[in-house]
Amino acid sequence: MAKQMSKLQTYISPLLKSKFVRELILLPSTLSGRKQLNKTEEYPVTKPSLISHIERVAIYVSDLEHSINWYIEKLGFTLESITDPIKVEALPNQTIRCALLNTKNQRNALVLVERRDANGKKIRPSTNGYFHIAFEIEEHRTSFEFAQRLREKNVFISYGPVKHSRDGDGEIGGNIAVYCLDPDNHYLEFFFDMDKYEEKRFTGGLK
Image (cartoon, rainbow, N blue to C red; front, side, top):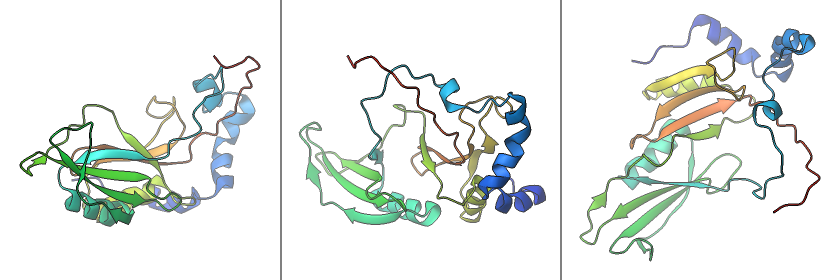
């Protein structure tokens, strides 16, 4: 059973919505020059990336309807559309059906894909190909609030809420995050207040 939000977390969660409060908390370390939460220092950049952003993520699921309901009911996604069975050249003797889900600010951000073999039997997915998927919580909301939502929806919290920093859990990023598993054991992260990235200019050409 996941732990309930403490009284202190319940009290400070609304305060953390304010950027002013967050900056005030970090002010002592900022003035002393000891602030560690700098994205540029954590991930040094020597060349500009050729990639602008990630448009969408597609994951295999074992039961499309069940996963659609779970992502809508538990996490608050909205459904854009569901495809008919599709034959894909890269998957011989298989068909797929896809559900396209929207976040608040991006259409088709997450695609759920159900595979079936030539006999129409569902193919169970593997989650061995990646570690986790991270979703940013909408502005003015916190990971503490999202954790409370997960508890209310009876979703077990695997980890967090936790601050990713050298002074927190030893990780980098500076964000505060909470983690859970979906019905197919995809490891999901929900975070807010990620450190801002300060670009280092690169004067050389791309190769």
